Image (tube, rainbow, N blue to C red; front, side, top):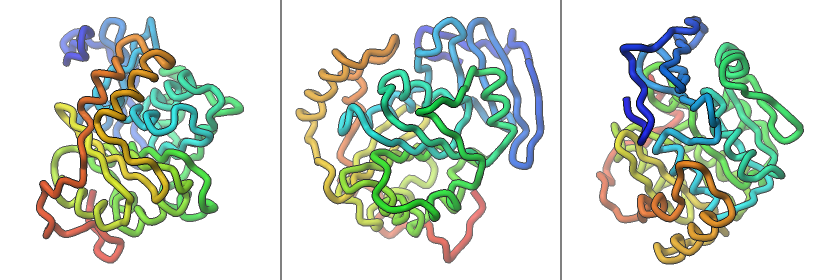
Length: 279
């Protein structure tokens, strides 16, 4: 599997550990200078370059980082789903004064991230080992600048309780009025996700596209709506002030599009708590 100039070769990988939890069959493996975690053999949940952990290998993760276009130094970020712990480490590298909360339901994922991916808590990074929906519902209102949904079931989908319209309204409640939600999806059921987000009363929605995934960025009521030119200017600022080894902010912003374009099936059924669906 290719990550730009870096290639993960399954044929020569070394299995470092296999472990089963309540939720996944987890594999830790290594090929050359790349180490990865995967769940139930369905693909990569996280990959690091052992010689330079600030290299961001996933295309979709580049798009998740574009939340900094709206606020380059957020006070508080909430990430649902830990994986290898790459995303919180990158945010901490880019914005050391940002308080980062991570919620991960699986203790084994947390333990393996610590053991194999050098994930560490500090005074600005804190992890909560619990169900993401329960965590969200007990949080006070108006406290996060950014919420990132990066949790998946063994089938590679966002857990149902984290994708319903009722949950989206909870995200909006605990966001600051200028905050935003970033969610990462597989391409399947795109119309249902976009219709659910469109009905949750986000001020505006952007859509980002990568070869295997897409993201939706939903703005709360007082967040700024930027056109493509304004996004480009803000990307130039990040390129100068928050550089990463293999990320070009100016190029990445070209993958962000207006998500309110109505180019989906607006009659698609939304996700709701009233009808539970397997994820």
